[in-house]
Structure formats: C-alpha cells, structure tokens
Length: 298
Image (cartoon, helix red, strand yellow):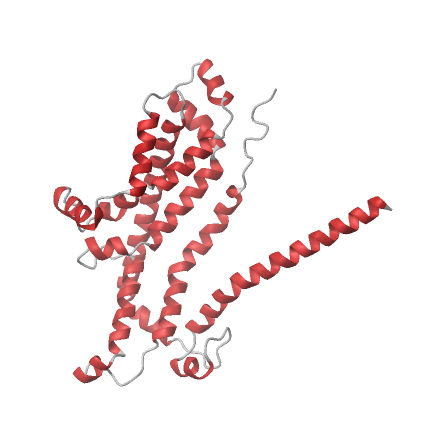
C-alpha cells in the first residue's frame, strides 16, 4: 500500500509539473503567434479589432513595403550573416582561450588577468574614447572589423567560462600533463570537449549579440553597403513613422494612404528573429550540465 501510494503521489507530481510546463510554453508561444498574425493585419483591422492571431482582414502590405527594397534587404542579411558567423567564431575562440589561461592554478599571472577582466566590467573608456580609437587611431570605420571587434570579448562570458572550466576534475589536465601533453593539447583535446555546454552557451550568447546589434552600425557605418539587418529595419520604421506624421503631410510627402506602421513592426520582428529561432534548438541540447560525469574513474 505504501509503495502504491508513493507511486500515485509521484505520478501526481509529474502531472502537475507537465501542466505547469505546458502553461509556461503557452505563455511564451502565444505572444509570438500574435506577432505573426498582426504582421498580416491591415491598419483598419488593427484599429478596429486590435491584435489577433487570425486576422479578420488579411493583408500583405507590411511585407510588400519591406520587400520594396529587396536588394538592400538581401545585402543587409548577407552583412549580418558574415558578421555573426565570423564574430561568433572569433569571440568564442578568444573567450575560451582567455578563460582557460586564468583557470589554470599553475599560471603565474592568472590573478592579474582575472582582475583585468573584472575591472573592465566596472569601467570603460566611454563612447567618445571608443569612437576616436576605432575610427581615428585604428581607422576601422566603414569596415567589417568595426562590426566584429568591439563585441568579440565579453568579460561576463569569460568569467562564466572560467568558472565552468574550474569545475572540471583537476585530475584530467594533470594526467595529460604527466603523459607529456602540451597546454595546447590539453586545452583543445581535453578541456574544450568536456566544456561543450559552456562553449555552446557563450556561442549562442555571442551569436545573438552580433545578430541583434544595430547600435555599432549606426555609429560607425555611413553608407548602405555595410548596413546590418537590424539597422536597416530601424531605418525603415523611422521612414514609415515620418511618412505617417503631420510633418510629411504638410510638406506633401505623404501619399494620403495610411502606411501599416504596426504591421511593419511585427513583420520586421519575424524577419529579424526567424533565423535565430531556427538555430536555437541545435544549441539547446548542450545546455545540460554533467557532461564530465564518469570521465574520471577511481
């Protein structure tokens, strides 16, 4: 009787947990479905019925307006993909390398380098100093490098990766050291494979940071050749807001037709977030910890 009661209680707990998770998933998925539906609504439908998952009046005006500049849109996608790919690879390499160095207890300068990382989390040179350094001293303005280098090292990610590597069994690198392995081999063949959850996490963080970055392009990019996707969408939104404004009407720039401002915003959310939503499931499996369980026997 006791065992059966325990099994029934365990099943009840599982049912409650599943219900809570289902409700949590609904609260996350529902707003995104509303965004998709609102992107296909006309301005009149939005004004009369508000946001809807299934539009009463289906319209493609928002997407037509965005894809009027299809050439620039494709170029911005290309720029964003290049920056995200190269930046994520470089940032992950630098972060894991730096974290490995300061996680080694035998390294003489680990405390100094750790303090340097912590110090940069509290203080920085500011916008003016960064602009003068990147555009004047390094002459990186209007280049791919200026979109990649400022974001390629995150102190928070280094500290997080350092903590993950310090949690690995110390006998792993010690045994490899006894067998004659160099620090590079220990790092690439032992520490990194055992740190896949941490590496995947910071890789996703960097990819999201590069993909969603528009502020760097707004400051350091003047022309249209290196305009990233997020910055282009920001410019389109500002143009639509201006054309719907009273100032545009007074100057005769308004066509007399209300442009789908809200629907365009929702459509841009779909275009900007779509690729990242497809990539995220491939990283999710690496977020589970405990990959080193059983790696050291005895």
